[in-house]
Length: 295
Image 1 (tube, one colour):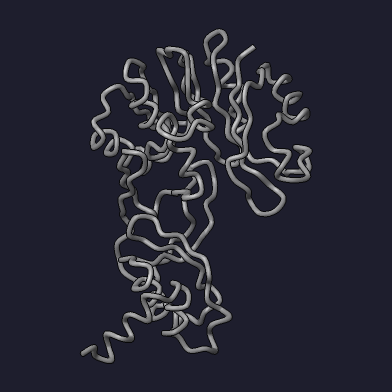
Image 2 (tube, one colour):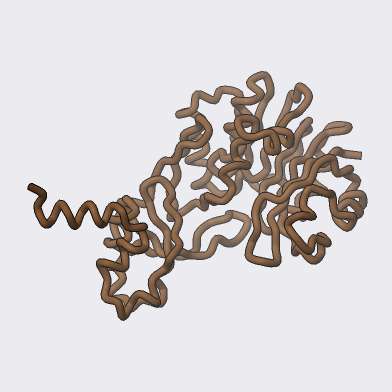
């Protein structure tokens, strides 16, 4: 015979996560509760800024129990070229280091010190992912690949695995990112990578491919990349643009190369080979990726 507690547990299991959360919290607070959150490894990130400070820990614990997280962090801004979280607040728990596995690669990082974007998961697959992604990361026998904003190895490790005969130069100016990049390279048995803790503009090295991830002002580094590329070298370029500037009025128009973007890259002495949207930043801005060939 089923007990009352087991019946309640079965009903709870059939409820959606947010329904489970609201069932445990005073209804007067429901309109303040976040319906969306991120779970990165065993850490949850959500916004409880409009909840009274006295209530936050108890509410954060409920979220942790429902979504299966050991720690809950207050959502905050990622800023600057270091792409570092601002003023991390732990709402529940005490551990900010976590591990993530993607496309056969294991990453370890400290979310109090380093950013992680779940929305980029498909594009971090590089050669291991779907064709629309791997086409951007397919190169003709490169000898040297430089990753300008390597972070903890989001793309560097995938490219090192995909091109074992090439030398991967992974550069990042955030010392904490470089610490975890070194650890992640070791844990994933990467032996063809050189790691540099510096501003990539201080590094003068030649390469067949340069990867420029999105940092908010990636285009400011494109001239330096052009100077470092070998003849007819390839740049993989991530940046954000307003959809109105790109000329896209609807999602159906994606898949073409915008004229304004082609002209801008021509002024930078690059030819656009491929162009795609990575994700939307709200209704009016898009994170894009382009495969550029040096003129």
